[in-house]
Length: 175
Image (cartoon, rainbow, N blue to C red; front, side, top):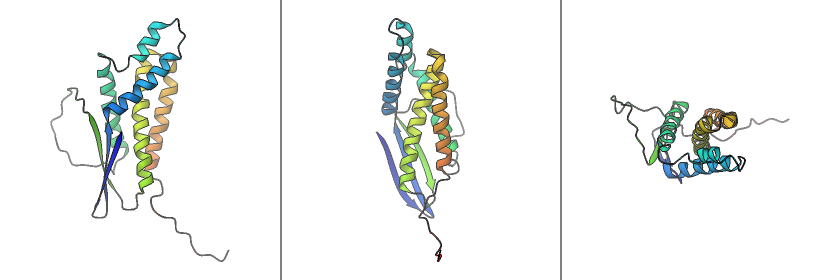
């Protein structure tokens, strides 16, 4: 499940995109399962390695890459995601949140459909990036496919900031 919350502010709209970790991990596991099941039946070790993306011991790697993805998405969405520094003391301890939250301050002309698209692009970007990272370790021959998908989604997230936000007005012309 992915949730959104929107509230009007002076000169714009504050939106919160909420991504639930268990939903992301479910999709990541599905893609890894599919990739593993496409391997030859006699290659049990490779199949097992690919499909065990979210198992104990591997989940830490998944968590680190997922956190990196959300940090990158916040940067990709600058200036909409700009926020004051709330904690100047940051360590490298692994933090595994159950919910990833992206706070956005959007212009009033930003459309709901663009926000819906952005939500789905971010979800797919995170899933594809985590799978690409895991595949690069367990099945290097397929890395390019997943990395290209993640790059394409990243570019779509960037371009979503420049989409038309409001209504289209056409000049009156006799022709």
